[in-house]
Length: 244
Image (cartoon, rainbow, N blue to C red; front, side, top):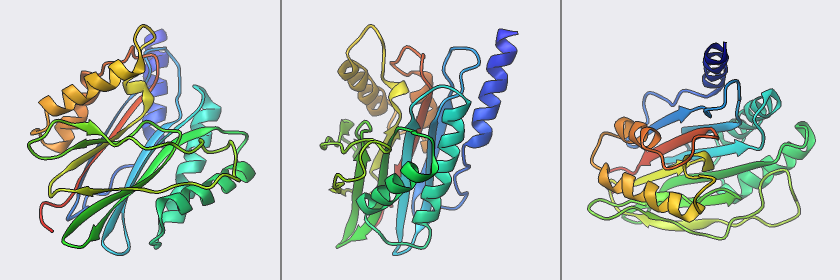
């Protein structure tokens, strides 16, 4: 019965997650998800990616606090609102997150949510990653031929906390073919180890398997995760175009 409950919860969660677009040229994207090991838990993790105007690609990963049907329902509302805000716009991630934060306060029921919203956009002779973070772990960058490293930046408050604070944008130039990995904290948290150790292990796994096809890479990160498995895990990887 416990196993059946777990399978039903996992199936429900997967039905709530979006399917990434089949055609993302000139970008490449892949995602993976695994539920918590606790039977019957339904989480609020989600991811999404889409092409947006001005030849850019938008990507988001988020985590609604909680492990119940209410968190999953709030996740669906927030994800759909964000898609609407992104559609047919060329707006900085911080502006979109601020707009989403105001909507979260009005529409959802006190749903505190961490999120990282990013754009890979053309600039000069290459590509730039521009992102804003609402209390979420930092993106992980794999540049061709280099060890994976985190793009640390001061995080703004999670959504659903304080709509008056100004949100920030951060930017980083991407070499051709660079991979940016977004993930939820369930992938790195372990109750017996500091979270920094989980982050170091994740970076090492990503470095060791950087040459895999993107779909295989995200599945490997899920399969070899350094966490204790008590929380949902979601991973989204986005590869910048190989040309300028």
